[in-house]
Image 1 (cartoon, rainbow, N blue to C red):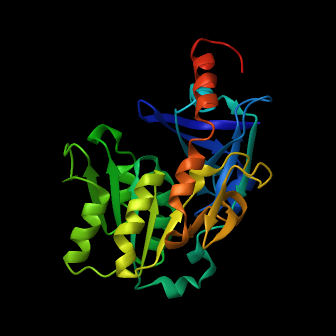
Image 2: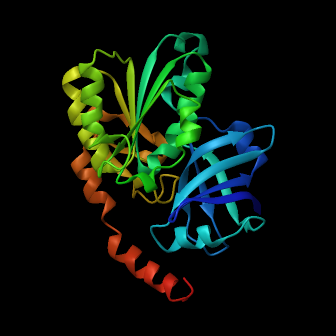
Image 3: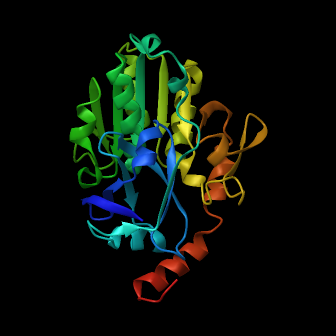
Length: 284
């Protein structure tokens, strides 16, 4: 059992939990994920690691209520326990394979859409801590849906907020802000985009003419997290890849986003039915 050390809602539907998981915390790296089960017969939920503290033995996750299983997890309170918390899984971010000294002086741009802010945080934190210049764009529909703004500002050089309705920061899409930064003369060695699939698709379309390397995370496709279910199959560079065991991060310019978008909607009817049962109190 894995005790919930801290729990707080960042928005009405997005919850942050710090979990007591010493073995996971000791080996976790930016870019990886964990598999969570709220109870013995519960669904396996893949969640990217938001932060980890090997000294405290805790791992931080951020989960959004979008269906039955996420609703059950977010209903747990501080002091309750999760049945399973397995990881770290997946490949760490590519820069983790490099000599940390080589990162100093590079400039990275992270583009985080909504919940994507959570997996961006440990990457920005690591790079900033090793001397890289880090800019972050955080996009949301409105100001009330922006998460982790204070924490993110502490691990980057420049934080840019974008809202669809103009309630905070740049009034418009993250792709517009990317163009403005590039037009101002800022040079980036690498861009990383994590967020809704449609956002990552258009970030890729925006940056492709620039030849700036772009990495995206396909964590939202994952279901089982071990490569056995096949739900996270995606075409990358003309080959079938599995996001959970070969990713979740890939070269954005090689990803077939249209296929990935179709795959995301495959289980939507079942998700809606399960969430309805959860809302009316029926066991799943």
